[in-house]
Image 1 (cartoon, each protein chain N blue to C red):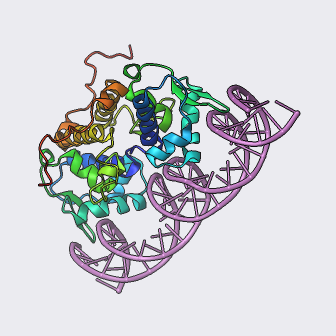
Image 2: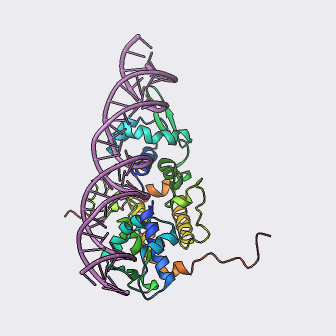
Image 3: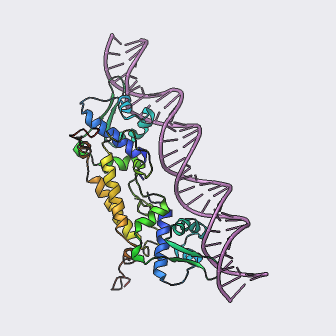
Length: 144
Length: 144
DNA sequence: CTGCTCCCTATCGGTATAATAGGAATATCA
DNA sequence: TGATATTCCTATTATACCGATAGGGAGCAG
């Protein structure tokens, strides 16, 4: 289950990518656009800054900005940092002590395959892809 | 994140399938084999019984048994019942009121694709597949 | 030095998770 | 009839996580 942390993080990153301003974008602008509390976003963005995905700048004229081009951000990286982990199964959490029953566990191979599937899905997609993923605007006015 | 409910439910189902006894298998036997508390399993199995995936029989000689052949149980069905939902995203939970931003949400198409991926994965696999999924025993003694 | 903005720590109510507990209902068998 | 085995039902608990709020400190610009 992907929580608001991952989803909000992604929305902020997309928002920043779409502004494509060279300068810093203050968080209150982003928060307003995305309709999310500034204070909550601060917490979420913290880990992204610490890991170099974002650069934060204090003071007047400060804000956040991307450190890479959108196509260089795998979605999986953002989600994994914001969520803390992408593993859907406790047994497969990095750093988990291997469960005693792993040898005989009939389900483990499936969990592993699932884990790969999830990882490949999210790491095979970048911020850029999401930007282009916008619902196509209808060329004909459907309100007619 | 798949919790113990889903994982335990699956292990019990596999256990039952592997016994392939025509009769009822008492839960304490399963619990012992699987090293899970009987009382906790009772709770988990309840919903599987209510939905007809298992049949429970009380009294001496009672227990649980499968109501179908293993190949007729999609893994997804078991997980979805035990977990309550398979949706990884709150927006896509069945019965969720559509989020106000769904039209403009850049991430939504990806969440939808992810949801399908997960569903197809788990519904495209049956208990039988898991039984055959056992780690192949090494033919050469690797402890040498 | 004033205001803006990120940064850090703490706190909180609510809910879910992972159990545990006690007993009621039901079936079997002697 | 009664003893025993088993599922079924309801309640309770401790712990942790989620989603968010709050207050203030640190740094930068004008």
